[in-house]
Image: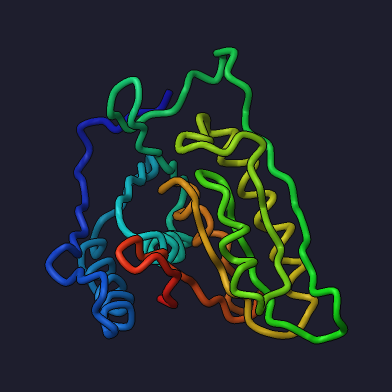
Length: 219
């Protein structure tokens, strides 16, 4: 396994501006993340590559991932809660199966053209929640084993990367924005951001689920 060594670390903290129900939070947070990332990374370089750790609301982790595309040799780590809280990946030589992913489509039975939604069901099955809005043609990426720690190895994360790139390319052939609803590990959110290609993909609209309001809110 690859673990962080004694190399210098860069910490980007946004807790001082986070307010879940603040209508202005997402617009200001995205700009602030870009500013702090540029400021903290100024003059930082590593011949050995970069170990990436991220905890934040999903839309911010996606944005964070989009800022990492120019960094060479990045390794994203996942936070596991059991058997103990740790940043690690399962041993690639263990018997744990690498997760696989399936694409499912849910389209309106009518001829009505609806906005496209990309639903990422990895840690929780959320497609029924999105269906209940009755306004999207849904593309769902569904993990073979939906649970909190569904991605256990770096190969599992690579499988997710390949699926995301394939589905985004297919969705890009149709006009219109892509509305994204996520129940995914922190590592997958960062990887999703790294896969986004502003010049090749349509506009991406991210949603965050607010448990206090029991609803998805545009970020």
